[in-house]
Length: 108
Image 1 (cartoon, rainbow, N blue to C red):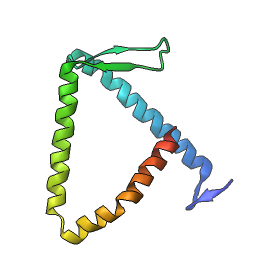
Image 2: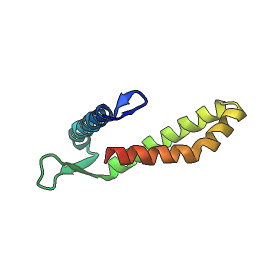
Image 3: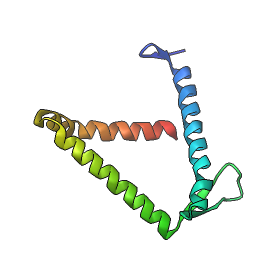
Image 4: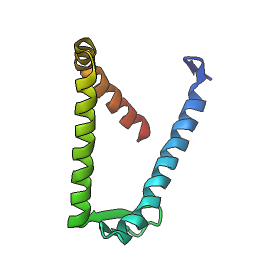
C-alpha cells in the first residue's frame, strides 16, 4: 500500500468517495426545497440515483443574486488585504486553477 504524505492512498480514495457521496446527498436533499420555492422543476433520467433541476426564471434570478452577493463579499475582502497579500493571491492564481482542476479530476 503506497502512502502520500503519511496517509494511505487507499484511505484517501475512500475519503474522497465518501465526501463526494455526502456532497451529492446534500445537493439531492436541496432539490425538493428548490421546487417548493418555485425555483425549478425536478426530473430524472429514469435512474433514481440521478436528479436534474431545470431552473425557473425565479431560480435563475436567485442564482444570479447569489453570485453577485458572493462576488461583492470577495471584492470587499480583497480590498481589506494589504497590497502584498493581493499580489500573492494574483501570483498564486495559476496554481489555484490547477488545484481546482485536480480536485475536479479526483471527484470524477
